[in-house]
Image 1 (cartoon, rainbow, N blue to C red):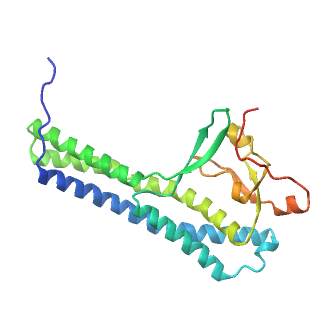
Image 2: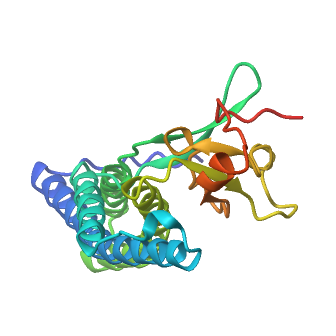
Image 3: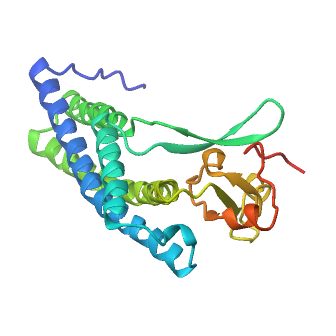
Length: 245
């Protein structure tokens, strides 16, 4: 015989309390990301500067600490503003075009806000189910505790994902600041490389038109390539769209 129990509606006060709990949870994750993000941005910018110095890139010769602070302060401010919009750094997606080509594009995703909505719905369902089934408050409380224990890793997972994107932004911001105009796309060179990434391997792009980095598990890189254009005569691509062979 089918289960005909209907979830009992929660009171307005209960729903308000649940929303407050979910918002607090979201705020806590945002605080973790803001703190983590500041450290990542500063470290990533320093690393990019150190790499350029090790390569004896002439454009880094006159780099001043004030410029470094300018790069990091702007990026930190932008990132904090994104968190205030209930999201994290932009996600990078591979978009398939009608002509068969693929282009990596950035999209803002309000995932922090989505998380709050999802948590509210899940918590509401646990409480409503418990009430309809006649469970004691202690039993419902234990189920809620179990739910939060299963989702507490979200802050760590999000921090790892966001960190990679912030490192990519630090690279681009550093290149712009010292006036690097061209970059070369470089893949990891193994069988795990996506075909639309392999299609760009070794190609030169204007920094302003460079392919986006940051797709999940992507290991590709962009290296300064002004020398290859100005001294070796390599020509930059006019499009950052990849096409299958």
